[in-house]
Image 1: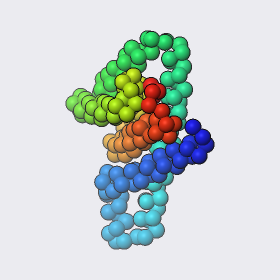
Image 2: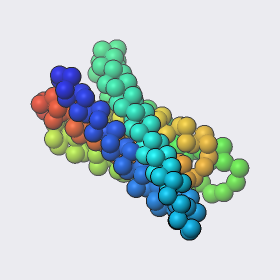
Image 3: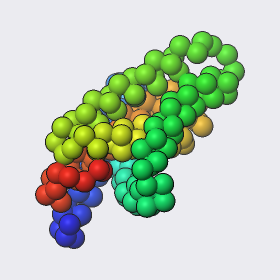
Length: 199
């Protein structure tokens, strides 16, 4: 893949991250917007728009770092584990899902395990859909690596928001991350014009 395509991938992913975060902020951080709209404060509103767009750009860059790190990890894993790389990825997917439920629940001061379970289940189901599309557009061998990327890498990228334990920022971060990850994963084989790679 030439540099022009890498630049295209970077800029479009950056734009998607900023735009999605900005749109989501209208719902999740509605109170912040309400404060500057009643009464109307132009500069404060512009500052909010700039802040959430910038936050989205940061999430996008984090997503891209995770994506390129995974491309390297996948090649390393295939070289090191060979035929065992797929089972290793399946194990890590299961561990990441367990971690997102059990350890988050243990770290919470109170409450039910169900919110953590449903959030994790939602991430898993959406990841399966993305991985299925990737496998259908390339080959069956791409399913597990794609699922690994969408579940494990997204979970790792999500850690800063999870540590903050602020539900607003948890959702404000994971949705753009997931969309940026899915976008990069599904665009890669189109940019490289391949349909046989297990990525």
